[in-house]
Length: 202
Image (tube, rainbow, N blue to C red; front, side):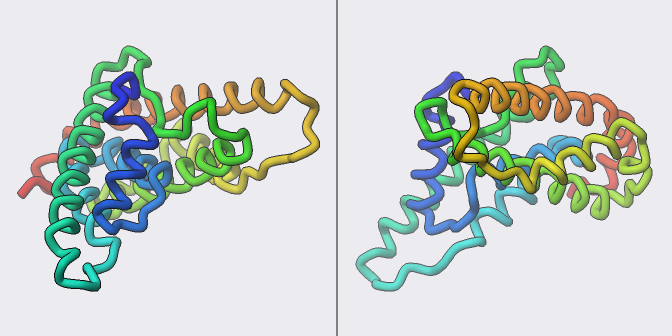
């Protein structure tokens, strides 16, 4: 999913800033994926409406055109991100990747982003369960365990004095765990999505 530079972490950051949105890119992508696990294709419109209203209005009239243009660009890019994320999850071929800063960024920044991603995922998942009246989704053993693990990961902190090299290995292992876990939750809740799709579709 992240193979395209147009859907890179930095590109999404720029698009959100241009639109005046204040959402954290990693957290908002986690939220999208949590919503999608329960609501499927219905998650996209709900998610985008929330993201693009989470910002301010232009201050000066001369900025209005630029703000509208930025919002349109962000809308298109976020739509592409949502579609790509759903496509990789539905494919079930383990190609899904969470939206996180690249390896050229500091380990501290990447760790903070991963924590925010996990927080966003749990938020989106719980919100989708409420919308879809699907409380049983969170009672499944595998799903409940992952939600607990992600809650712990959301509290993740960067240890500055870690032995060189060990931090990168731990980071890679955590990202892999998150990646596989999200795919597992998505597949675990396939029946839930099929059941509630007609109820939440407008």
